[in-house]
Amino acid sequence: MSVVAIYSMKGGVGKSCTAVNLAWNSAVGSSRRTLLWDLDPQGAASFILKGDRSKKDRARAMVAGDVKPEKLIKHTDVENLDILAADVSLRGLDRLFFQISKKRHLGKLLKEIGRHYDRIILDCPPGLTETSEQILRNADIVIVPTIPSPLSERALTDVQMFLNSNSKKHAPLLPVYTMVDRRRSIHNEGLARKPKWPVIPMSSAVEHMTKLQQPVGSFAPRSPAAQAYARIWRGIEKKLAKK
Ligand SMILES: Nc1ncnc2c1ncn2[C@@H]1O[C@H](COP(=O)(O)OP(=O)(O)O)[C@@H](O)[C@H]1O
Ligand SMILES: [Mg+2]
Image 1 (cartoon, helix red, strand yellow):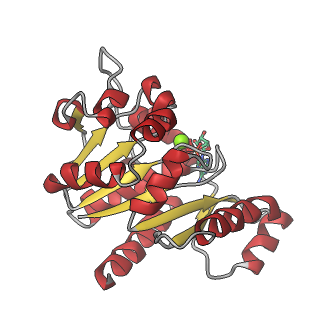
Image 2 (image 1 turned 45 degrees about the vertical axis):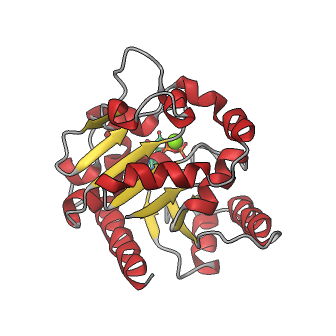
Image 3 (image 1 turned 90 degrees about the horizontal axis):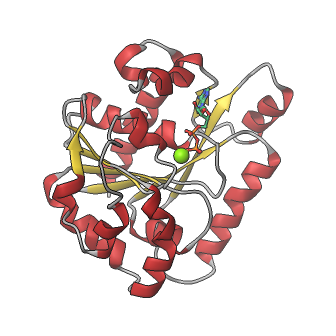
């Protein structure tokens, strides 16, 4: 089982859309038993995959060990893809991790839940918090969606410096450019600075995901954005195979 986190210090950069589409590629393209675990109380990925219909907010209680993960995990409309949905109770996640004060807590949970899966995709809340640190230390790969601009690239450098500032191990950070619009000079300048970073184009298909509540691969598989996600996922599988 491998854990792929979709993380950025910033909000609104395309983390949730990336998480849903990479999870779809894992489940459908690679036939992996896949779980998308939504850790962001905003619950965008849970909404898109129609996983957010529970009566009680129990996501935090599950992390605390008071509710069994199996009680909250649901199948999605996509074969091989399950969802562990977020709800507003996750607002208190940082405090919980801090109180538990066991640095490996998330790692243990991932191992337990991961017995039934080949891939776990984490949709992360923004920020550089206790929760982020647990995620960054326990994932195998961290995908960092980044809108091309000097400020976004600086946020990535900050996270890298934070992780390197102590000797504990962490997953490799793999930036991908998101919402790229080649008509904009600032985007083109970003692409010229980092020509090797994968690119997800600005796409109306991706925008429609929240209306249709489906991954792009389900309704627009030939769109440039769907193909970009597929390419990025194949690259992730290659990296995981080398581990
Ligand atoms: N490639 C894209 N093209 C167009 N719109 C996008 C793209 N990726 C994300 N969006 C839109 O941008 C907004 C923020 O995306 P989201 O994935 O929720 O970001 P985050 O999880 O980082 O907050 C959403 O309205 C989403 O529909
Ligand atoms: Mg999000």
